[in-house]
Image 1: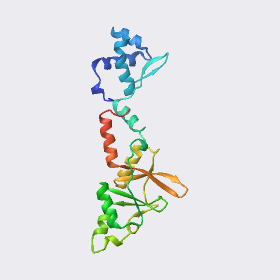
Image 2: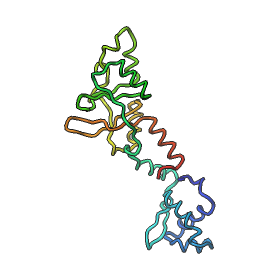
Image 3: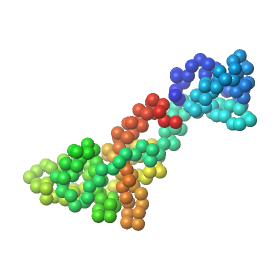
Amino acid sequence: MVNDIELNKRQKHILEIVKDHGPITGEAIADQLNLTRATLRPDLAILTMAGFLDARPRVGYFYTGKTGSQLLSDKINKIRVEDHQSLPVVVNESVSVYDAIVTMFLEDVGTLFVVDEHSTLVGVLSRKDLLRASIGKQELNTIPVNIIMTRMPNITFCLKEDLIIDVANKLIDKQIDALPVVKKTNKGYEVVGRITKTNITKLLVALSNDEIM
């Protein structure tokens, strides 16, 4: 864990020793605590993996000087889209609004990505788009989704190399539920994944459980 509260008494003592005397070898730390190097090995591993300490061969351990919140921030700012994206749900631009509603219901998603005959991203459909089209006396079987979708270039998207924190900010700024993950092709952008608010929530839970190194 990266939270100070979760460190035991000996681990906190080790941090104080390294702060005062670092860089310092594991043997020297063990001597100050009157313990064996083997006894300290798990504690040193935890403190190093959590980011409180760093270690260099033939030099020893030194304190990174970062708080638990700084370490968590560092961890978050290294997480990329490709590690947490999910499979996209796409429909062809020629399908009817009715079929799109059925697809959204069956796939249990809040956003559909619309592609052309080349599998290139041309639009996005949200629940609001489909609900708006459903109001009134229109025949939904006869209306193609390309009439009601949000079109390029007004689509916000991301790449698999993007940082997840930047995508989260886009979701907040645009007040949308999902972004398509795309890759550039000679015909446009191919949809290769999606990032949703649910993906971000799952990531937050994983971080709280310290499941992401």
